[in-house]
Amino acid sequence: MRSPILIEPHIRWLACVVNAAFLYILAPVAFWAAFCISAGRLDVGVVLAVLAGFAGTYFIFGVSLLLTCLGATAAVSTFGTFSRGWQRSLFGIIVGAVAGALMGGYMAFKLAREAAAISEPTKPFDSELVFMSLGAGAALGVALPTLWHLSISAARRVWGTDAEPAAPPNGGPAESLGNSEAGGGPPSVA
Image 1 (cartoon, rainbow, N blue to C red):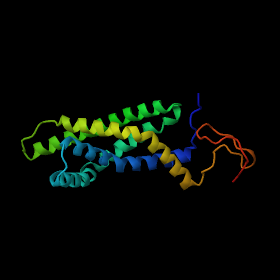
Image 2: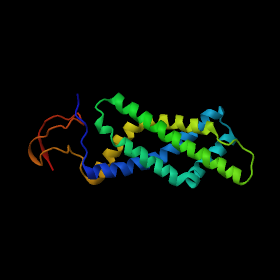
Image 3: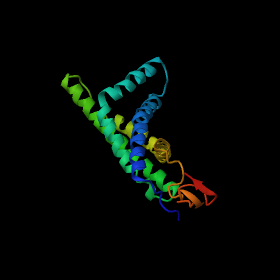
Image 4: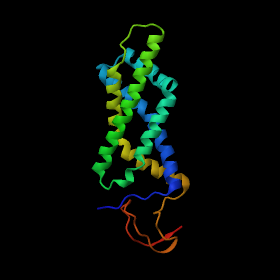
């Protein structure tokens, strides 16, 4: 069994910021892709709805989307405790589906409340919106382990610690922590 991935606290913090930014950008893309699929056609009307909706997603739901992305990132930052890829993937799908369902539920509630405020006849709660968000979140959840590792790599590049974290500074073979395929080798030069 492989050991869990060890990440320094300052790298973990920066990786969380990068991962939340990735999710903040990709979550609406996944949702509106699910919208296109559910529409069953791709014509000018659907494209215009997607373009207007994509911009509206950040304008209307920006803060709640950011909070959802931060919550998902907090859950995803525990990926290092899972030693197998299928465990990380399954956990990512669950986190993505839960975050998508929560965001979709909030969106449906807010849209129904606003429609009622202007006395527009509408369904009290749009369950299709919730299921579309759940599906988009689960689809994005498949990519969460990869996004998390990309976030860690980006954070290490920004912080300037691309080498193995446990490598001796000058001399001796570099010992792998289990989070890379690099084994012992020539001395590390820091």
